[in-house]
Length: 427
Ligand code: SAH
Ligand code: SF4
Image 1 (cartoon, helix red, strand yellow):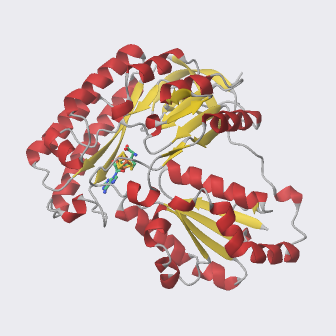
Image 2 (cartoon, rainbow, N blue to C red):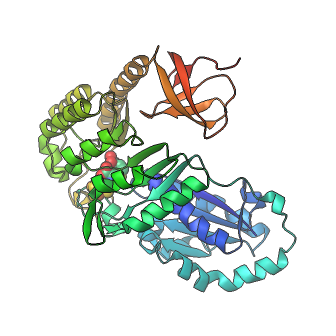
Image 3 (cartoon, rainbow, N blue to C red):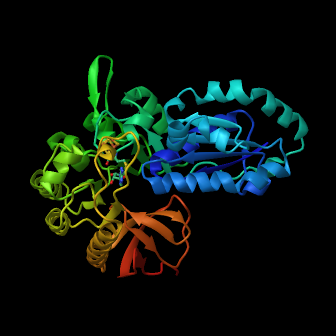
């Protein structure tokens, strides 16, 4: 039995896709590189923006012929769009066999067994001849590790809390155990994941383990070279977190600081609990505490009532924050969110024009950030032959030999559009 997994959207949905596909692998499935070879397809979907959900729906639609070729094939749709649309997905796409919403990821093993166990058994019998040689190599050099799920915030534009539910923290022991087993399987870098990853809070033997302590504990994992985390909330970026980042050798000099807007008026309407001033002060402290730290951000343009002046404030904030990369989005009203009740009154052309101006500014900042690395010799973790990333998260390409998992020193000879070009390390 072979399974093809497709994740659409953020790193959370990728991590969820991996977790569910592991459940299916424990059930006897082996990975299939392409849908044509697969007996089952698992789609891990996103619904943060309307566009993401549309991509998921059109992918599901396009898999109808795949299913018709052999009706025994199984199509599973999971994740945030599955949570939002529920069983209506099966009405619209009768070729979908099973819908597993994002809130049920913890119980996915039981749910899928109940719904599809018999069919999987039948598939195993009809597919006895699958070859062990089909099994690709195991662990990735950079592995995801989910530490918390859900979100307790109520940012007015955001659908995440309603499709993922309240915050749930995995026990610290379970996280540390998974970290060790991922490293034993070949991972050199771990990406700790959660919607507000740094709100993490649990305990070990009655002592509190908040995010900074968790970083310190994960850092001690033997043979682990690098730790990153995504997506932190500015509210929990405090002195203790900065100290842990500065003091843990494996924690990379990189931080995503999602600003969303530079206008305090809009930030308030978005119900983000910081101001542009406090965010910039944080960036300054971060740069002082962790020299060379590389920052990135998320921005939404065209939130209801955003004026030209508000947008100018966003441009100033971004200019001062100087992120090395930024993910900029046009506001997309999501049904059921608070801001969707107010009129989406910034015209499409205005949103597009603002997005283009913002992207142009961010491209310049990216270019400057990349250029500032030229001439340095940086530690690069090889992810593929001649390709890897620096501790700050910059992508590097160079000609030469390298094995995935290898840590090398690469002299940066130049910068291309979105990556650094290293000197050849060929003899
Ligand atoms: N938990 C993360 C964000 C998850 S959603 C955080 O708090 O940073 C990822 C990004 O999608 C957000 O940072 C935001 O920039 C964008 N986003 C979320 N809802 C959106 C909407 N309705 N329209 C446009 N962009 C949105
Ligand atoms: Fe959405 Fe805000 Fe929660 Fe991030 S913190 S997932 S933007 S509600």
